[in-house]
Image (cartoon, rainbow, N blue to C red; front, side, top):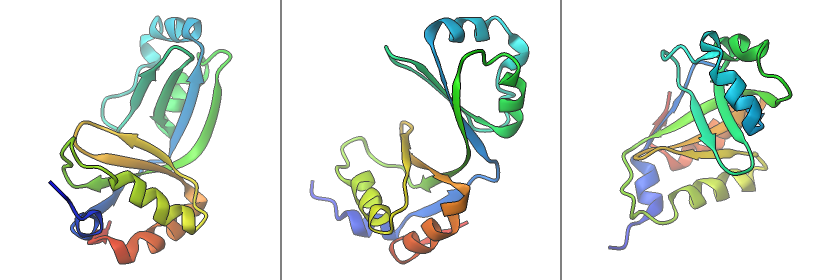
Length: 146
């Protein structure tokens, strides 16, 4: 099956979450300590992400949840000021090159991204100060942004 990625993009809406997000890197031991603090758990009303690999635990939290973790984040590293863009199209797991094309478009405009994928949708983290430029850059390639 040969899918035209640009055609797929033209049928895609890009949704911008209203929240501002922070990425947090925790060592595994600090993650365990954080789990012992139920008051630091995400509220379950805003998007969040937890990814654990062998090197670290990465959390993506909105500003409200980040404030709750703030006093318990221990020796973590963090970077704030991100906005979450969602490509509102269900992508089959066999699609090849969707995020590569999005990355190419934004890279040509010198917009750094952090790519995230859920089971059926792809997402980007874009710094707040690059958001308008990113949406303007994607504009000709997508159905709409909101």
